[in-house]
Length: 131
Image (cartoon, rainbow, N blue to C red; front, side):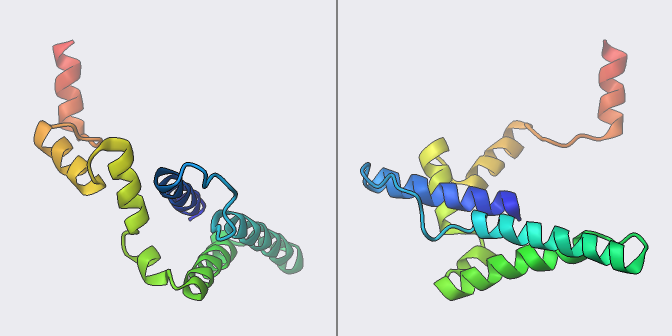
């Protein structure tokens, strides 16, 4: 969630700069900074729970609700929650500026060319036998 918030904020800045080069200023409507603060609060809650209960606790039990709740609340407050939940148009526009194509077109072209990020064990063993 933190990386998503950082990517979303940076994409919004890139779109703003592409429309007006003088628009380089810190964004007041950031998601990343509140998400980092929420992460710190969740981590502190996890540590307090370990101290109080004298046994290990799953940290994600505290981190996810704090971070997701913060981003969801801010998105709802700003009227961007539906856009955040679905694929944000800002990210698609940013990909189009950077790569000249939208992200799903980039994925489709990689699949057609055989450029896959994942591989299976049989293809790896075939490559090892060829070497």
